[in-house]
Amino acid sequence: MRQAFLKTLIECLAVDPAILLLTSDTGFHVFDDFQREYPENYLNVGISEAAMIGIAAGLALAGRKVMTYAIAPFATFRCLEQIRVDLCCQKLPVMVVGVGAGLTYGPAGPTHHTIEDIAVMKALPNMTVFCPGDPWETEAAVRAGLALDGPCYLRLGKSSEPLVHQQPPAFRVGEGILLRPGTDLAILATGTMLAAAVEVADRLKGQGISAELISMPTVKPIDRRLIGEAVERFPLLVTMEEHSLLGGFGSAVADTMLESGLASTRLLKFGIPDVYCDVAGSQEYLRAKYGLDPESMTTRILEVVRSRS
Image (cartoon, rainbow, N blue to C red; front, side, top):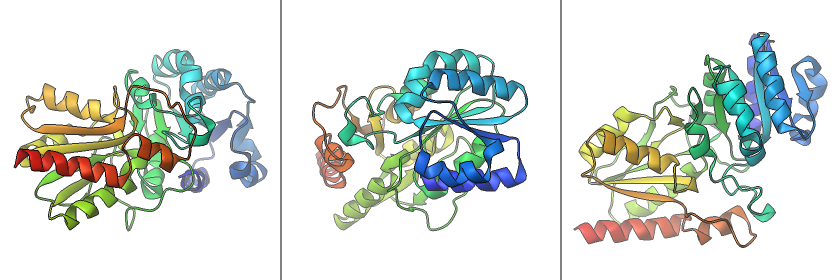
């Protein structure tokens, strides 16, 4: 996703030289060539994320299209007050880019895990929240975010996310993307869980269960129409996110169901429980620890389906 972000940034710069990338002493190897080729469009502000947001706000008021880039927990939590006051209260068009979301930086421990950012960012008025699921969706989200007239948060994985879509998908802010039709249940996945959701759908197919698979690259605004249609068609909705179960994507889907009077359908949420990691390990290891690996999720879905038949 990082490379997809950088590629799209360069393409957008060719059209709009007002774009400016700020970093907080992050991403040196990724941005080395970019710094040399576009020195007028790059600024390293040092390890000072809160100041970076203030600088971004000032530059946005001066007419620049600004992106701030940092490891996700530092791009969001460390400068939350500045994001709230400087960007959201003034509805300034600044893109806050957080890389390595979820458990991507597993071995670095809970200081580098980002499992509450969706909940925090979607609670801010005027903030749009993008959680692309593969490099194609990342490119589309960057372009969509630059066209907004207010702030947005772009939640990225890192470098190992595979292409899930076969070609650039139809991407619109606030809309989900249908990857695969189904007849028995619907899986709604966001962000870095999209590839795992595909594997779960394949495993369920092997068990004779047809799962509709939907990517949700925008968490705020949420696609209320698509959720409503899924509830009317399926007895079970499944959400997948690499984020806390509290306040994230699954909660947004649940809120939509309740507010729309659509609570008769069962909702099964996959995410991280209300704890911080007490061990260090790879992203794959930690996903398995919290039941977010394809095998564990498939087993749990089968238990629910069979209990209802």
